[in-house]
Length: 255
Image (cartoon, rainbow, N blue to C red; front, side, top):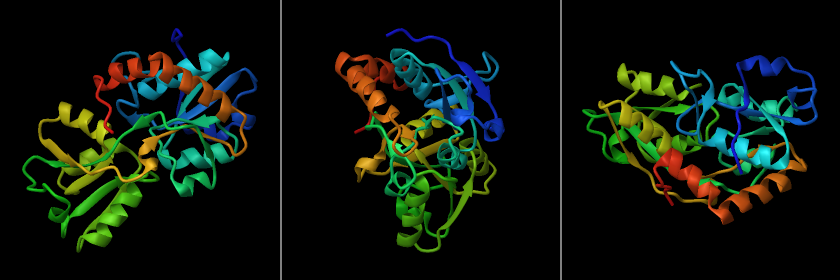
């Protein structure tokens, strides 16, 4: 299976599209994503200025195998399921986890990547455990699965204030400026930021449920679910999925 270049459409303009899937070409699938989540999806600033990442490569491989062209549209994470429900995109792939709440509004593929949550903070914060968040401000991305985890932490630890932002870089900026004491982020994404910013550190929270894995979201009753699952399974069996994981995560997939 050979990856090919895709047409990338960046911006919330997708919300103004009226055709099913946001594209009049029945052979083109429109993928909604939130390109602020390296290494899953992010804009290659200063170079191609295109959206790249693990999810992009995987979506490209799947759609190519199925004979579709792919168009990628960037929007805020909290807008993804509403855009899917309104048939403005054909599927959503954005490091998304299939929670029970999301399953009420979308169908999901099988899990294609497992990960964990991480608490990110400044290196000199002294925050090393969940208990150390007492009296602190914890940031989280709006609409993400980490919102539920942050709420659970706030219930368990006294005086934790949870604040949300639309984008992951905003959470990191709030930590750097001292407005947030910490943020909760997917571990692979957090590790990417910590590698590039020496002032950041963090610790990982344990996986507790199947929904800790990432899956692709579709409109309810979409025939694409079965089609995508067949290719995902094929890529697991022939090692191509492992190759993508090695490319973007140095071969280390947390279980």
